[in-house]
Length: 366
Image (cartoon, rainbow, N blue to C red; front, side, top):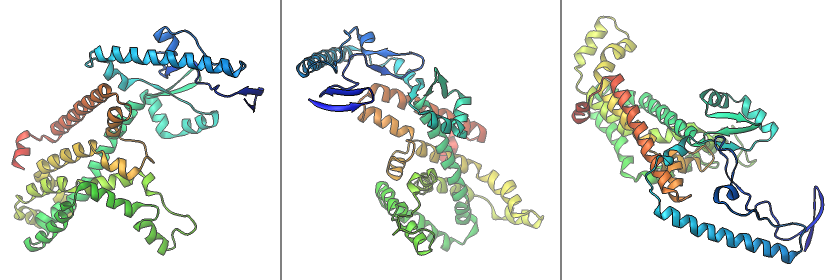
């Protein structure tokens, strides 16, 4: 026996711990209240008595172990006969989970604008002094928002490139620009993503250049943690899927008669007005196709956020689906999440096509 001083005084124990009991809370769902092993599976209330002799503690722990093994076999038998295609798998997407927070941490979290927004949306709430969040639904909405932002960033970056390729430079220079875009894509996507780690790492290229410029001091342990910034993921996603935005816009822009641009300029139109009234309306089908392709690829991205963030950022919904299949081995819920995510993405694409007046034949033509 080992004697350990606890807040309540000296206690002699070896195997006692808070989890050595059948009165375990299974889920932290605000709607379902407190659900325990004893209540859900009609088990006897067993626990290891810290004050009992060592041999008695061992016997009590063994009794719990045997009971747990029997329950494990029983649940596996029930699950093997259960119908996996049930609506309950989708309900888990909306379930809330208790977030353990100290009083100080809770005050900090409540003051953050993002948490305030979650409170307004009903994705975060407080009950009986405890904070609950609908974690899966929050992750889903964040991923959709990140994919939309990445698509918008890709459009801002790729529109000038597509315009210069189609209308701004000569055919000879356009060939070299095309080669500069295409050659990096001869490398496997996974290798290109890993190459970015050598650029954004704490001792990577960017931090070394900043060290030379005396902005940071690597020897003193000063560096910018780009892997903690969501913007880094956006930049890598734009780089990874840039061709899917450039090519559709370029294909449509290349069919525009240059005389229309010259006529607009002769009539006194500014550069911005030429793009707003002539180029963009003509390139709208290509923009729609490029945005849809980039959005779907960004929403389904897995390797980029997983590799670039290295667990230092909130995960994307694709990572949640992966974890359901391969980490928690809950493939039924993972399949439900994947199906729901696909339907939501298709719905967003349909709304975007309606807003842009894009048609399916535009995809075939481009």
